Length: 376
Image 1 (cartoon, rainbow, N blue to C red):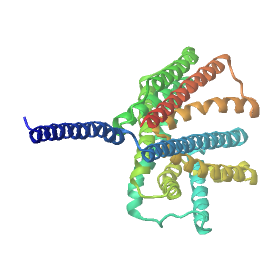
Image 2 (cartoon, one colour):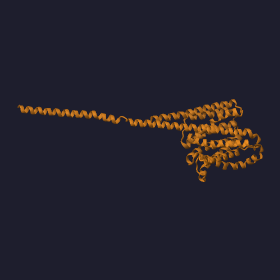
Image 3 (cartoon, one colour):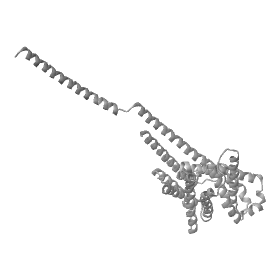
Image 4 (cartoon, rainbow, N blue to C red):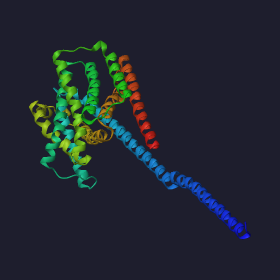
């Protein structure tokens, strides 16, 4: 073979080797770069991590603010409710023995008048805002007052035909009816611990009142109606606070105004106006001053009730109403020298246990919601 042929062969071999090396380099480069690209695309960016953590913190803060508002509304409602009962008890203990008959309905009317004057004064001073009277709005709000008036009437009738311990037992049954209605109409499913709390309080009331439980057909009829009207009042109030376009103070205005319209004819029919004017012993500044103070507390209680139902729900509102019996019994013992029997102390203890179980259930639910929010 000539030298030229050998040189050509050598060149071809060198060219072939170069091509192979280039292909290998290209292949290696591609194989090495591809996983890096995929890794970069799969790895989370610092910006997305930061935004998700900020969102979780924001949700946690909103949940804390919401829980604070709920607790505040419950505490304010409890304070106003206890104050209202103590004010009325002061009136009853000071003046009932001077009155031949009763003025219960008329006192509610008088307190409603004071509440209307108070909310209108606040509006005139530009402290609160709500629209002027509208017949259409009054019609929308009227069922709340009808349920309220029915609750008052059936409550008085049930006390006439049942013993006080029996009424206490049925009041705890009303909480269960309210809880069922809250689930049926608004889809709020109660936790198991909430049901345990209701059962504990009902059992405690029944055990405390076991020796005094007596019931008749007439008494059962009025107590059953009182349960339904009381639960209906709370549940419709919750519906109205969401459906009627009014501020809370506007609702207070209509609530008390319509209360006057519905209850004043009842007070006149029952002769309570005549009793008021014929009983000179109660024509004192002290009597009217205490009624005026009770009316102001009633004004705050109206607002507190609407706010509590709106923020905390009908079930929580009902349970707070039951737990209010505990401070009432203690304040009655301290202020009015009321006698607390061993049965009453037992009922107070069991009610407090039920309240603690209910509080634990709500705290547990709030904690689980926070954990779910943090995971998201």
